Image (tube, rainbow over the protein chains, first blue to last red):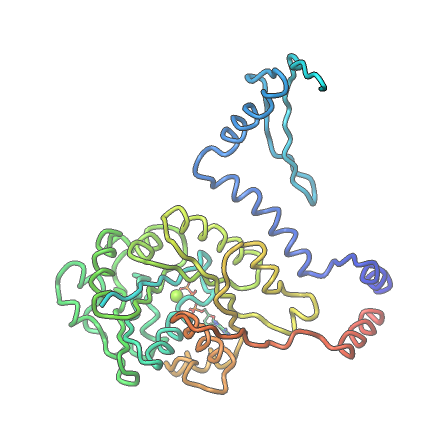
Length: 92
Length: 267
Ligand SMILES: Nc1ncnc2c1ncn2[C@@H]1O[C@H](COP(=O)(O)OP(=O)(O)OP(=O)(O)O)[C@@H](O)[C@H]1O
Ligand SMILES: [Mg+2]
């Protein structure tokens, strides 16, 4: 165990309890901040996404899904956005 | 005169709000400012004992807002420091005995008389918190370098922003340089990075705090106390002075690092 710690240290992989604390805080605050946002945060984000993406393609706004997905040490924002049609873009 | 109303808050309980209020208030009074400490922890009053003024209470904040007495009658003058007063909390009432509206007018009233009105906020985010922040111009958020405390501080900062408080600054309390050095406590930079808020001071863990609380004499009057020194510096920053941060000695030297590597290898 000690040897492994030393290797980790030398490789810059830090698993001191401080590092663990920072990681856990980072993840828990992603959820806390999303859950306590004054407006329905995901709905607002969806509307923004629709506005931006619609400039490039036609999407199925009704079926669009945005969720958080958790794994052990990361949180990901997953967006499922069905595309109906691409806008025709011409290089010039 | 229009003074400033500062609320000392944290979310999590027991992280040092009352200790901070007592020490900053005393330090400001020692600098010659006129200061009143307001205990809004109704039902769990403590600022009086930390200040050593518990035997002099006649009226309290609930008596004042209900007009059972004059404001002047409820304020206790601290005879040790010129210009320092305490408005104690009620011990036998509920937090709902005072409303945010009443706190706003009380704060406005006190501001006319004092340079600094320091409000000691109860733990939590319920009515007591809402009361404490109602009349405040600025907030001092106290957190210790622990996951739960920083998490709660984040929530509090969000609520302060939502309530429209213009300025919130962070005090990190009970830091232990040795633990930081060996990687077992979050460092100042880690916490500021996470909370994205301006730091006004760092107070080390210090046994003198316990001793001074035993005696009812704030640590700022003890010039050998590191925590006392930290609080005096924060008070000077509050009045707008530029004061360097205290060196808490956690930069390890080459020798320390070598020794730590050896220790790691031997574990
Ligand atoms: N820097 C420090 N070093 C050592 N002990 C400390 C320090 N700061 C606070 N303490 C101790 O921590 C305990 C809690 O402090 P305090 O009562 O000020 O916290 P609080 O946030 O007001 O608590 P509550 O939420 O219950 O009102 C006290 O016993 C106090 O003496
Ligand atoms: Mg307290």
